[in-house]
Length: 125
Length: 125
DNA sequence: TTGCATTAGATGCGAGTGCATGTAGTCTGC
DNA sequence: GCAGACTACATGCACTCGCATCTAATGCAA
Image (tube, rainbow over all chains, first blue to last red; front, side):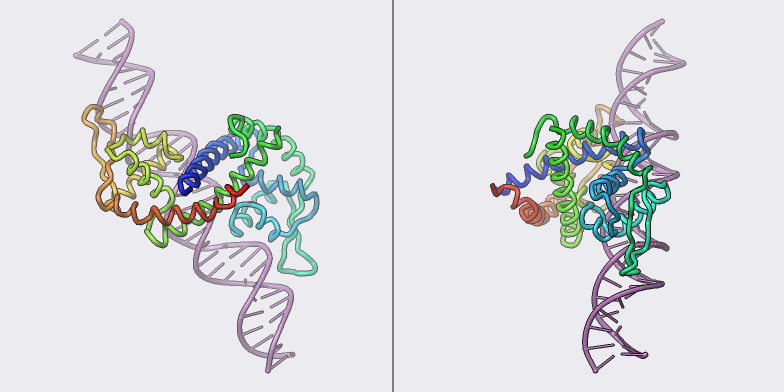
């Protein structure tokens, strides 16, 4: 029982380390993106609309402060835009730019390739 | 096909984030250990003998430099000892101390509890 | 309206990580 | 035996992360 949890944990640990390391290297070298940047970009593409920062925070596995900085980096790179929310002026809307969409499109096959290599030996645990 | 990999990746990402966050907090608050420190200690206990740093490097999901520093921290805390290897004086042997063993013993139930909470849903069909 | 608690997001800070490199010990071919 | 390649580990550095805290906007009650 406990042992099964530990085994699953080891699996998660191993796959996460391997995939994360490859993703960071491949996405970084080929597309100038970190894994966190890609993840945020990916969510933006899937939403296909402006999204509240808070909403992203629930979906992405980052702290609020880390997300704030990732979005700041993406904005500086011209891949997303930040705009104030009219109904609640504390809030921030994030939208993906055409360049952001293009960069994501280029990076997607790279990500898929990495995941395929890491997970090809085993599907769901 | 690709979609299955992506799904598995999301699973790994979610579980890793949740478990790692809990482990860091619980192990840190209750036992003064980080997740990496505990992982190294855990390997040491399982080996139950002096181990080459290089050997640990293959087992633990850390870079060589990170491992070097984790072991340095553990040594400073008195939980492991470092000694030179006689047959290859570049090498370093790491051994667990009684305090290290005790600390691991105290921390183990905490780790198991966290894993149980994070993964308990995974085994339910 | 005013005062206070709450919320969204930004930011200072310390800690841990990986990469590149440094240092010291070992092996190999001549 | 020795020069040069190689290996094991340590360390400088830049970067990202989470936590705590700050600021500004909102909501709610008196």
